[in-house]
Amino acid sequence: MTADPPAGYDGPSLDTLAADVDTGTAETLNVTAPFTGEAVGEVPACTPDNLRRAVERAREAQEPWAGRPVSERVAAVERFRSLVRERQADLLDLVQLESGKARLDAMEEVLDVQLTAGHYADKAPEYLAPERRTGVVPGLTRVREHRDPYGVAGFVTPWNYPLTLSVSDALPALLAGNAVVVKPAEATPYTALFAAELLREAGVPNELVQVVTGDGERLGPALVEAVDHVSFTGSTAVGREVAARAGRELTPVSLELGGKGPMVVRADAPLDRTVTGAVRGAFASAGQLCIAVERIYVHDSRYDDFCERLVGRTRALEVGTRFDYGPDVGSLVSERQLEKVATHVEEAVDAGATVLTGGRRRPDVAPFAYEPTVLTDVPDSASVACEETFGPVVTVEAVPDDDAAVERANDSTYGLHGTVWTDDTAAGRDVARRMDCGTVAVNDAHVAMWGSIDAPMGGRKESGIGRRHGDEGFEKYTQSQSVTVQGGHPIAPPPGVPNRLVAGGLSAYLRVMQRLGLR
Ligand code: NAD
Image (cartoon, rainbow, N blue to C red; front, side, top):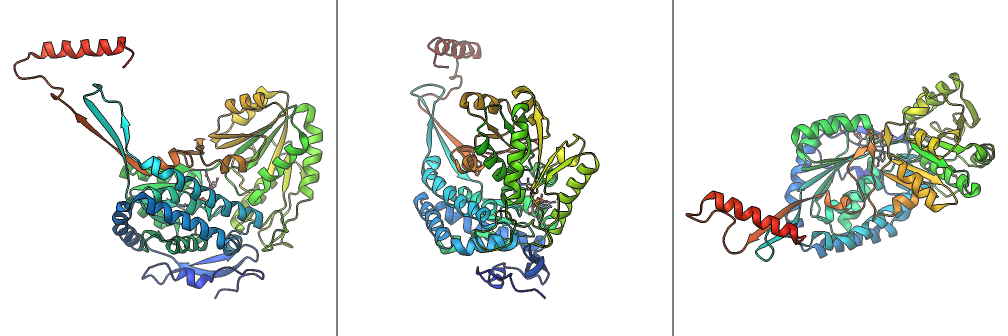
């Protein structure tokens, strides 16, 4: 038995969405609304066989899709972007319903999908146009590089950004001519199902996009084996398993994994704006954001002032569970996530950390709600200092100078996203360049970086392999083919000419080209 969605939910019918999953299995998976902690729907718990059949259906639809002119694929993605705008209220309700996040956080996803759709729809024709490459013998060797889709692109996605992470990354794959199979997180399947419905409404062929709901441990391995390219977004631990299996299968894979975002506050930082950035960076999506700020390193001279302002602004945040823009911070996604966050804080306090504000569960608000929390005096050995917390918890530490800040920021197995706050742009860029992260933002938390779709984003160290966004975010869904046409005689010894002469001729040719600066 499932309960009705919480009061205020006015989104799509959950039963209708679940009926879109094509399966013969009777097993189901409950989906809980974090606002109430109650199961509000159930989706099929697909089997590996169901998944393999979905991949086959997608594969059949892929060839005709890849055969269409790129302008038709672009038109479908542009229509999808319009539909996302038109159905914004439904999407916001659905994302909030199953993830528990605040409405503004859900809005970031809706905006992101539109930005990504627009960016890659503009760029796809250019990326897919054959490109001339320099041949080894100018005038005689003519080379063209072509870009072809892989076939079926598989996506395994987490629950924290259920719209962005199951759809935005899939858009360049579709534009490149791939079919798409998405295995959404167990907690948030409905958003992916609804997005697939909108893609079909936009003119994407029926079977081209498949959403296979169910348990990751069961379906993940089958997906990696069945598809031609895997994009995994999730924890580092599961990412390693996916990479190992993809390695055995020789399936290309990109991995967007965990983070432990450092924030560096320089002595010259404009404190008001910096604190605004810290609050957004640490508490957007209740901190369940891979690029969240989890560690703040503040110059000694500003430490007290910074902490006082940060605590004041954090206390002013409204934690709530409404389908409107009132609350600043929503619920955590699940009991499990709540326990992890609470344990990180309790352990740190036992080890000597000080709670400047927060540090409490908020069952009065929602079963999995947790107060935005600021900690200081945290020992390095505490989990909250070194492991990803993925909740509304941030630690603050004083540092004597930029060098110490950079050293502390880089003292992590993760390297996803960092931020620097300063009045001096050149110094900010300098600190950014010394941070071992795939992306660094100066004077913004994450939106300026993430929204700049033209630039690649992704992790260093244990935060991932590969990039989304930018040229790489499209090209990774294609495989190149270079076609070389040689004019005149093939580059091979003519009959009767000794190999020694041929070798000398080729070597002399290369010397001349090097002198001319052509090779
Ligand atoms: P998770 O790794 O537990 O699950 C992610 C997905 O993998 C889910 O769909 C799950 O069902 C599936 N899965 C589980 N076991 C699997 C297996 N053995 N093989 C294949 N797939 C399997 O992660 P989560 O808890 O859903 O999400 C939170 C994590 O995601 C955090 O670590 C966060 O930092 C990370 N994340 C990273 C990015 C990024 O862009 N780098 C973005 C968002 C979230």
